[in-house]
Length: 119
Image 1 (cartoon, rainbow, N blue to C red):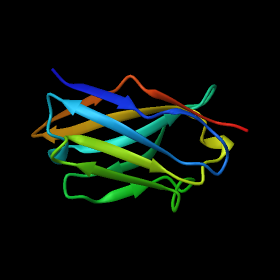
Image 2: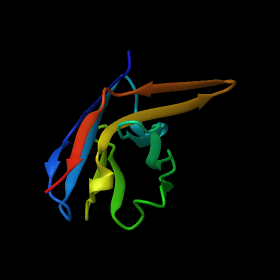
Image 3: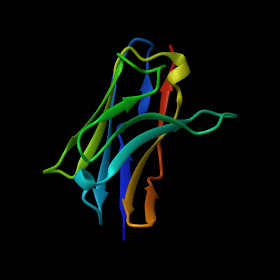
Image 4: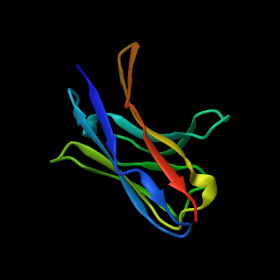
């Protein structure tokens, strides 16, 4: 059974930093595409950043230059380093894994962690 557990969210002032973690069990993160998504109140869930099995990263335009996605294969954990945070970054952040095997796509989500950017 796959479990993705996010942590590291909290309240931070504008301009501050947070590092989110997504600890995985039941899968090997290095052979999955791992992504961070966020959903603000009244808005749709959106992709923030992703990292493929080959290490290719992708970022939403709104976070480029501020956020960095990475993974620690030994810890089977994916991180999202968030710097220069803005109030508009306030959302619930979710970890997702995707793996395509033949004709099937396997997807799992974490439960989310709240990030609030406010003075």
